[in-house]
Length: 286
Ligand code: NAP
Image (cartoon, rainbow, N blue to C red):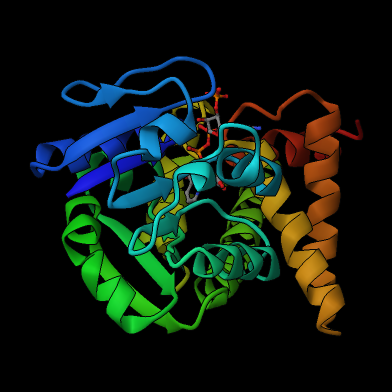
């Protein structure tokens, strides 16, 4: 398929590379110039989308999606009937629904296709997609979804993929914070870290989140797989969505305080696992 891929960050660069590897005709665009081997490079989203059947987006946040789709020289300037726009960025569901309406007004279609699996799954083509949109449109995207991921879960209409994504990341944020606080307490109590890790891995508290993060925490490697600023952004989205729908998320509000502190400490570009450093500082009375 002829695909325009917009956004070559930690996730997008590997997703685009996997589309190339699967034999698609890919044109990439990134705000700061970047290339992907085997893909053409465009100077704007509009140019990238000019000849595309599918426009795939993976950028930071709502403002970035707005910029690449509906901003000056945005992809929507090249939108033609029959084209499909798929967005893997994590943004507010209701705003994604508005993008879908705008795409449909032009005879195109739109799917929210957020992902889980982080950097390692993006590299390995083993992402899990949760999709929102029309079944027949998602069906057309199947070869592309299979090139980038191992599982596609159809959640529902437009915006529902993102609703599920926010719920997923809520759990990830809470599970990791549980791990960070347990580790900090156990260390203070003189528990050997390796013994604690073995116990976690062999007990019911084992989780995919901990499986992913433990090797990094062991090495104290906080280089970004999922940057802290993006999880912080997702927490704000969850709280906004909760407020609008009358839901209270007291545990998440507490976890947000840790992210606020980590942000103040200049940890935005580290992995969100670096919230451990903030919990450790609190334990030292800092
Ligand atoms: P990232 O490495 O920070 O990359 C962000 C991308 O967005 C870059 O290409 C950046 O361009 C672009 N961008 C930011 N602001 C922009 C703007 N105003 N206009 C145009 N482009 C803009 O982020 P990532 O980890 O790839 O994440 C991308 C999306 O996937 C986010 O919504 C994130 O929440 C979601 N996600 C991430 C993970 C993960 O584990 N990393 C997992 C699931 C979902 P520049 O290169 O020019 O800065």
